[in-house]
Length: 202
Image 1 (cartoon, rainbow, N blue to C red):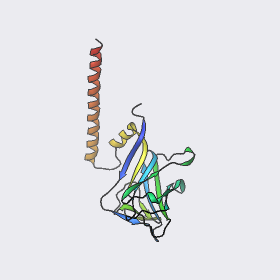
Image 2: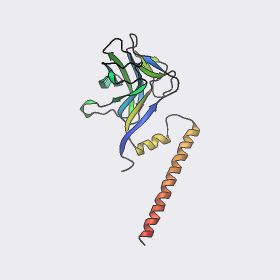
Image 3: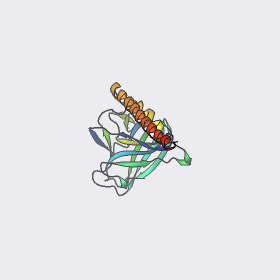
Image 4: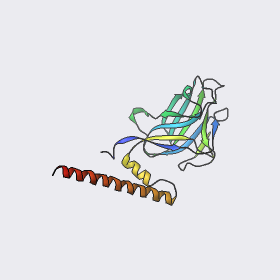
């Protein structure tokens, strides 16, 4: 029961040398391919408002799988904090879910006042292994700075921890060694408490 219990897990997509890409007359849409290891529950995207909060307007987040739109919702731009993550709750209609898989998020800014400015933080080079950054549907260097929240279980996270999608051979060996040591410690604790239980019943 413990290993199959669902909980929210998080993947951080954060890199050095990030820079804001502003929504303006030329930049109407910023998009990013991404992969979620479990049922998607939330996306956090690093935003900037240039120290002036918009009083109105909307951020429109879409999630697509190929040409199919799975989620589309407007979020208030007035809640954007400067150089902070903005949280987008993923609540598809009709109790549908966005399961484990590869998708594309699109973000549009619909300003209430033409003088309001917002931007999305991105890395300056291609670092995220599961997709590309797009501006106005054209691929660009870099990746959006974002977090993926998804429903998972400890058993499912075990496989992800032991077999990461990328990394050196030595980091993989270190992960496997750490997991085996953890199992050994759990086994020792189990043996200790079990032996005490048996002695108490003698």
